[in-house]
Amino acid sequence: MIAAINKFLDWVIDVLKFVLDLIEGILAPFFFYGWAGNWRGFLKQGATDAQAIMNGLPIAKSGDPLWKGPGADAYKAKVPAQVAAAQALADVCDSAGSVCMDLATAGVLLYFAVASLILGTDPVRQQALSPTSHAAAPNAPAFLLPHVQRPDGIAQADELAAALQAAGTSVEEASFPGTGLAGHAEINRRLGDPTYAETPVVDAWLARVFA
Image (cartoon, rainbow, N blue to C red; front, side, top):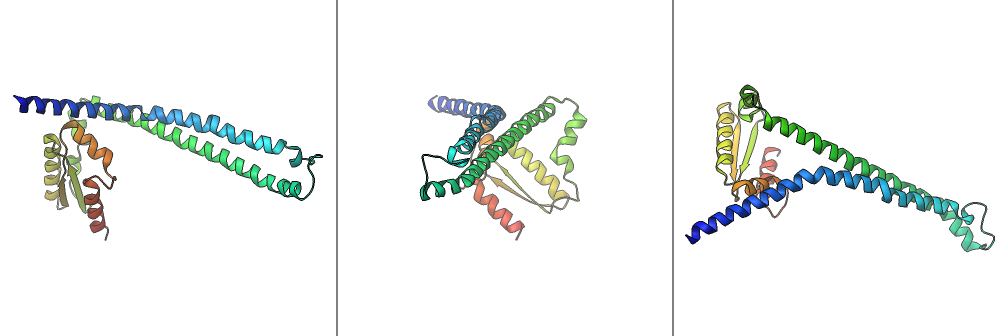
């Protein structure tokens, strides 16, 4: 009885982790929209204001009657560089804002594309979208199919591997810890993290293939 309860609680935790990851992913484009506004808004405005202040200093124009001498001359000589630096910072803010806006837009378009795939009901179209339907030669010379301990993920990897091998393609499968939806989300989210078990395996495989 205790074991069954613990197993159920583990399942609930996995589902909650997956839901939280899903929500974080869904909200990502909106975060990027907000960051784009910040970069193009008050951050860029701060740099622009600094540029205007430096350009407006009396010493930057005709000279300050209350400040003369070597120190004033040295400062005045540096004003153009400071103004240029402020302009460069404003340009960086504008570029960062543009990148964030592009990422946000790409994320929204991706959601529409995924929704169209998920909501589609045409079996012919669904079959055409399956990677297994495109396993015939000619193809890439080698594939690595990583998966966690999720029954449908294992079955899909096995099916794709069999189709690729039947077409003469070299295939390796790599199995990693993780169960349920949470395990599936983790393998997508953490690939590239050097502390995650999948990363060194993928790195080694890439090194062999491109040696």
